[in-house]
Image 1 (cartoon, one colour):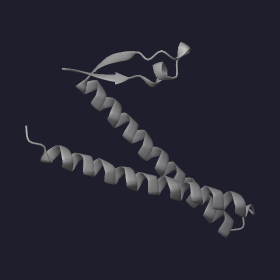
Image 2 (spheres, helix red, strand yellow):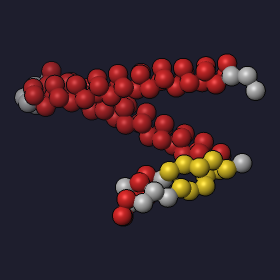
Image 3 (tube, rainbow, N blue to C red):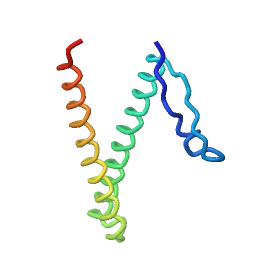
Image 4 (spheres, one colour):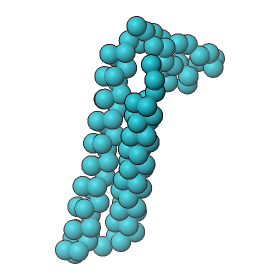
Length: 101
């Protein structure tokens, strides 16, 4: 069974032509899992960086409050986005499970 997905390289490619690639279900699942893992790692790294800078500020090791606040806000936005994506994925899963075949 093949599923057609648009490759983002082709969408942003030369001459604005759209090309479809045939990707198997297994490949799509692996790509989705990889993208999800990368997003979670990015979220975790942002949280760790924010914690590190906050601790450094509290210990007097850095004095750039603006940088600490910007880093904390970025981590907060990433976390909120992650929670919203999780809710949408769960809603989509529940909708698929309700489908009658």
